[in-house]
Length: 170
Image (cartoon, rainbow, N blue to C red):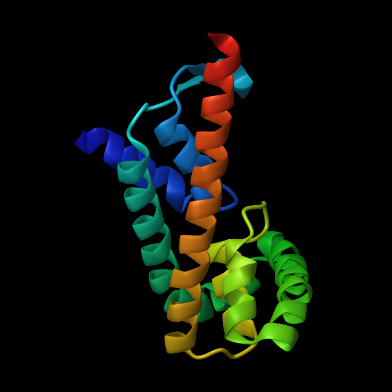
């Protein structure tokens, strides 16, 4: 069980995957062919355990990431190869999150984090909140709310899909 917990934790920390990948991976069973000849086998754990591990991991990610962003930005800007990529990513994140913050404030950041689509989540939410000058305390609250909502949505989608699959494959 400890190794499965560590696997879920590590998948949750991957940018662009976060809860969107770790929750289905933890709940579902079976093997899926991956690129380059790799195969991934679902962990087949109970959904409350997977939900708790992944949501807490994603919350901790945001809480740790926010204070590190300033130093990360300074470092990335010094590396020419990543500088252009970083600048585009920052501008894209600012454009995406700005509309939510203008309209909804802190709840807008939480909703941005909650959208279970690539490009949103704790990483982009932390970057966006930092770039618009949101306080660390307000970000922590927005992050916890957003990650919880995203966790609920992804878990519901996974469990619904699992139930539909079981119904039609029986």
